[in-house]
Length: 209
Image 1 (cartoon, helix red, strand yellow):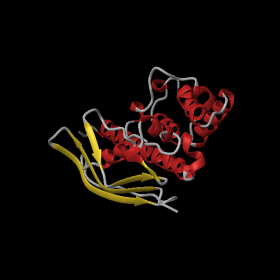
Image 2: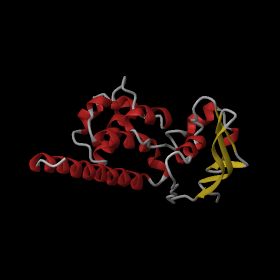
Image 3: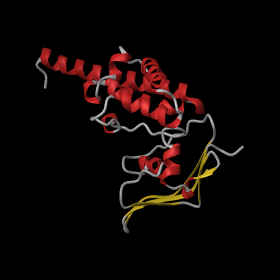
């Protein structure tokens, strides 16, 4: 059985002078978590965007090999990539509000994934969307589905985006780890904010600063 993702000698650039990624190779097995570590601007996000063919205008990608589930990503057209995105692969962006369309409700964006890729009814898709929001720790999930992204403040923004991105991946394995990862990051973000608030309160109470 082939690896889930195979990349050999990936190059990504923008224009004629900017080389964002040069000669990256990696293999991700099924059920494996693979971490790309590096400084800001070193090409981690660009590598993921290249795999999903979501590079900004003017960007290009080249590779000796780039396959996902044995399928050659370099040969897929836009329709072929759209079939995979949200169904077999997804990206949780660093800024959650940029991955949720402010013009539509959270529920409409989540149910679209299931209705498009799985062919489920609106009612079934809505029930599954509410269940997934509850699983990542969002209170009153039914109410949240009817809200627009800007109405969901704080950590719910991140968790809503995380839930949206993994929504279509439940049948491909690893969804549980992704959900637990979202909850862990939520707790980490909450802890950082809590410490920051306590530090600010300490400054106010003691007159430091």
